[in-house]
Every structure is written in structure tokens, then in C-alpha cells.
Length: 481
Ligand SMILES: [Zn+2]
Image 1 (cartoon, rainbow, N blue to C red):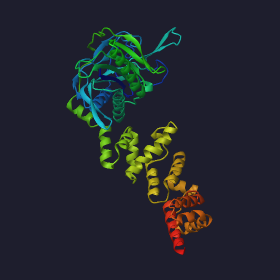
Image 2: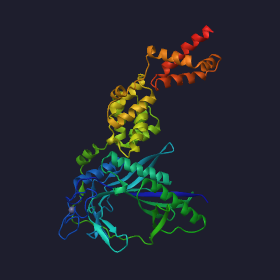
Image 3: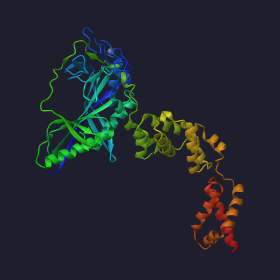
Image 4: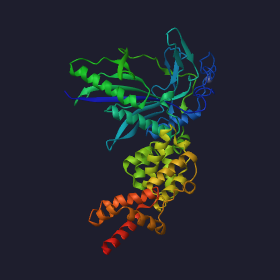
């Protein structure tokens, strides 16, 4: 029997506000435990929450970028449960009136654009962090994260393959970074993902029994974990068994998923409206103000790069995968570089150099203007591509511009006929065998002669000019014969 896979993702995104969602405590990551806490975020009796306006701005901005309808009149609710990292005994969240609904995100998959529905986007507070001792003797709790503003983004079950799930998650990260609402660091927990997956016979309308994959902490593991789970469920169903409703986690060591707990009944969180907060009303003027801050989105930019710069879709995808890379590329073009050449240098040499050192674009010592100058020197014939690559490496290491590097290192390409003719003659005199071969019709021998001239000039001769001089000289010899 053929099965169809159905996947839905729940993504939690920490907003990068300076302060928490309902109090003035700092949100910074990596500080000593329990140094950013106050009566509000630790739930002391009598303390009252005050909503952070910037958190609302960011959530609405993100929701607009995900094409959501904004609920301009909505409320917060209490989600009641007990856990040591939740000192209030409830989490302030949004239940039946999320700030955004009915949106979508587009992904490019195998050259086709696919729309994944977003069911809802709501605003809530993060919980603290439990640290379990390795020997199981005790647990410590850090409340620094308690009350950090969080968005929960729930997709429709529109995802059909584990690869699409990874592309969707990457798409969410791109949009959050473009909107500058989160740093989306999975390793620091500012982007977290849970996935639901089920299989059903092809053609069946109703969904199969799903399992939930919890706490996926990298983009690679989203795909790997779902691939494993898809295969596991397929084998269970093919053998006539039934999939158990349960929560599982991806185990990095064994590259498999393991059962965490069965989930026979749904939780009852006894949601009720948060009585300490007034309803949130976003009037038209406020909404318009936020709408004006939504930037050009990754997919729009991708399409524009293909249209405006005639770039291949692959280049456009890489250059727009990160806001900074796109800005660098466009600045290089604005400084006069031909777009495809600029794209090649940015994607290849520049990102290659930085990746090799574990650095990001902000660390680059080469400015877009300097890269454009280097590209111009190739176009003018001052540098060969090979020389330019050597020059570029020195530019990356020293931050000096191309002209300075070429002068200081004596790397200028030799295109001057007067300088090259005597060298060519010398090579011809020393390589009579190759000369004879060429004259007797072996075109290949020319390559060997060019190689000798390049060697004699340590690669600095302009190959095009050398080629021309050699042909002139050799045809003169042919006439003499
Ligand atoms: Zn606080």
C-alpha cells in the first residue's frame, strides 16, 4: 500500500526585545542564573504584568510577513499547569484569539514554489530553564528566561516530506531575521521546533494517527528525525500494526527517534482570560505604522534578483538566504561590478573564506567597493582570474585594497607586448620540439608553449596576449619554412 506523509510544525521564536514581555527585566542570554528576575516574572503575590509594546510590534510585524490576518482586538489567557520552571503556576498565552491567523509561507522545492499554510501565530511568555544534575540527585532552576517574549507559529498540516519541513523551518528563520524580530539561534533556544507527523493511505481524507517529535535543536535534525519517523511509521502500518499516539525525541547518537511518553489523553489546561491584563486593541493607525516596517521579504527579493540581475535561481537563493549577504552583493553591484561576477565572488571566494574560519559577513575586512575594484581589474585584463584569487586572499587577511596588494606584491598581469615578445622568442628557441610539432599540425603543442611563457613570468603574463604573440611568431616561422 502507498502512504502519504502529513507533517505540521509548531515553531517557537524568542523575540529580541531588550526587556521581558510583562516586566522590565533584561532578556540577555548567558548571564549568571537568576540575575534577571523580579516579583512579576517570578509570580510573587500582588505583582501585576504590564504588556511590552515592542513585543506586540514585533509579533504583528512577523505575522504580517507571514501573510496573516491580524486580530486587531484580542486578549491574553492563562494556560494553567504546574512545572518548577513556571513559578506562577500558569503561563500567560493566547488561546482562542491569537494575534495572527490564516497566513502562509512559501518554499521553493525542486524548482517549484509551494505554499504552506500558517494556522495561527500567538504571543506568550517563555518559561524558565531546569538544569538536571547529571547524577540525577537534584535539579536547579534558572528564571532568567521566564517571561522572555515568545511567538508560537503553528503551520497547517500542509507539509508532505521531511525535506519540505526543513525548508519551511529555514523559511521561518529567514523571515524572522529579515524582520529583525529574533536572532533565531537554535543552539541557544531562541528558535525551537516540535513536529507532528502521520501517514495515511494515498487517497484517504482523514489523517492517520500522529506522533510528536519534541525539542528538535537543529535544521538537519528536523529532516533526519522526520525521515526516521516516517520510515518507522511506514513499517508499522505495512505490517498491519497501529501507530501509538506518543511524544518522541530524536536521538543524535543513534540517529533514531525514541519514545518519551505516551499521550493517551489531551491535556486540559483550563484556559481562562488573564484578568490582570486589559484586552489588546491595535487600531488602524498603529497597524499601519507596523506594516510600514515590514521589509522586502526573502521570496520577493529572490524573484527580483532573477529579474533585475538576470541571476540563476540558485545564486538568487544563496544571496537572499541572509539579509547581510544580499546587502553585500547589492552594494558590490552598486559599486560597478557586473552582477554575475559579483555573485560568483560573494558566493564562492568570500563566503568560502569566511566559512573556513567560522566567521560571518560582518567580520569581512573586504568592503563591497574593494571587491568591485578587484572585479574591474579582471575585466580590464590587469589581473587573471587566478591572480585575482591570490590577491583576494591577501585582501581578506589584511583589509588592503586590490591595487595596493597588486603593487606591493608585484602581481600585476603583464600585457605589454614589448615585455612579452622577447620572452616568447626565448621560449620558442628553447622548445624546438614543440615548435616542430605545432608546425606539423599539432595544435596541442601551442598549449605547452603558452605554459612555458606563463612559467617564465610566474603566471603573470596575460594568456590572451601570449597566445596572440605565439601565433604571430609561429605563422612567421611557417612562412619562412
Ligand atoms: Zn521580571
